[in-house]
Amino acid sequence: MAENIESNPFVDVSVYLFFEDISDKQGVEGFTNYMVGQAQSLAKSVPEEEYETWDDFASAVVSGESVFSSFESIEQISKCGFVTKVCPFSKAIREYIKRIGNFNPVHMEATDHFNHTIQPSAAHSACMMHQTYRKEVAKRITVGGKPLQYAQIGAKAYTGDIALPPESWKKVLLEKAGISETQGYMEMRENSCLYLLYVED
Amino acid sequence: MMDIAIYSLVDDMVSKAGTEGVVEYWLRVGESYAERMGKEAYVGWPAFNVAMKEGRTSLTVEGEVNVLTDLAIIDRDGDVIGYVYALKTCPMAPTMRRYISRIGPIPDSDTDVADSYNNRIRDSAVSNYCITHQKFREVAANNITVAKQALECLQLANKGMTGDVKMVPENLARINVDERHIKSILRSASCVFALIVKGKSAGEEIIE
Image (cartoon, rainbow over all chains, first blue to last red; front, side, top):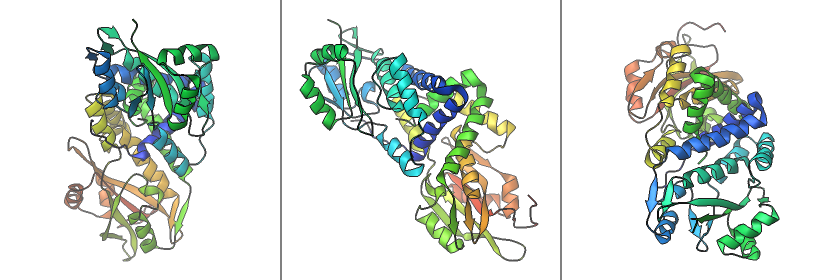
């Protein structure tokens, strides 16, 4: 497991405020675009990875050795189903609430904007960054010579609200992850994020 | 993970808003962060310094601060008008270490934004984050009163990741502290600042 270096929450909170300032000047769309754009840039900066087998990849992800798990602790619940127990943004969110108070409503407005214009999978504004990072970083990983694919199934906000895909998508994603809907809900009770990682056959 | 976003966000913003635009964003963030922390009042310097030591003030949300009570700042009448404080660890240090370890070298935009601030506003930033951090302290200090007198924060010196040091000579002169003394404090700290009664100085009073 790589060394875990904790961030200073002073910095985390100021980044949220930076995004709020962007929304003052450029609206919710600007907020969303910057959050998505910087996650894409961040992912493009990480080193590429290649794994011979699926087991090699899954083992590297779970042990925190893959770039996919650089910022979060990931567990494997089925061959292609993975969960993140603790949202890596939860500490920053707690510190924001503790120091400043209620979250600026623009975060939920941007989340709605993302869910309506990009994909319906975010429970909080931080999910936009996190899910975009995962999607882009997956493109930098190959398993058995094939590019890694990522699809979000469930995300839980600090308020307890869970973002799930539309019924038609959910069924397909859960089937691909090899878990039932009930198991999916059980996983979301224990974890903050449930997603699918796979390579095309 | 939120903190790591800084570098890619700043990189993106420099390409869209230029280094000057990013400086303006950071200054506004520092100001709004401090304003949203609210106001504080202390009956006197001992109460305030205990709160600083115990990390209870808005100025200590950034990390542990050494309160250098041996460096009381005295005005020409012999009254204590403030003290010197040393932030032990830069709040960006863990983020920098994590970025370097997980992603790679810190992007050049970090230095470009800091240089833009240093050239146009004040030569006191060793990284782009210093801009918002120093602004935060200045505004937060204005929201604190000690014995019913508002405070003012004077940035004195800071040290970058590679060891480069920035000093603010005009502020050192205002509190009449020798540069060599501040350098010795920086050996075990990342940032040194003074908090004084607003408008006062170790010599003549400053008119607002």
